[in-house]
Length: 121
Image (cartoon, rainbow, N blue to C red):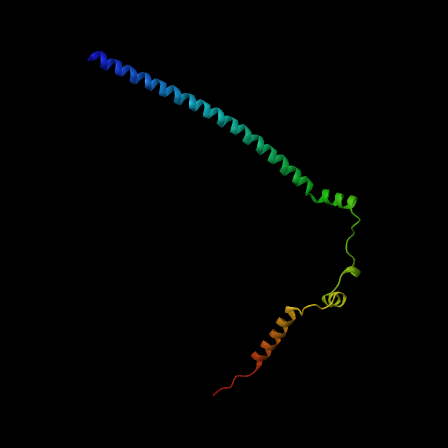
């Protein structure tokens, strides 16, 4: 009976050792993958930082002004180019009546209604 229990105990110890080895190998493999992912993350973060710096350079007012002067012949607006709302309506047609005019007319009616005296009984 002692030999059978000793054999069973040896099998249990061998199975535990094999399980421990398998778990240890899996942990090593996962650590390797984690290290690879950390490296990939660091590379992506550095690429993002470079792209942000490039965007900041490209969107800088000095750079945009230089591009605008070399690529276009745009100039600042003059007073003659500006239109008032009435000039705009004359030039391009009235179209639909402006809702703002109706609101202004309603405001005037409300003001008149508020001025009327109240009858006292």
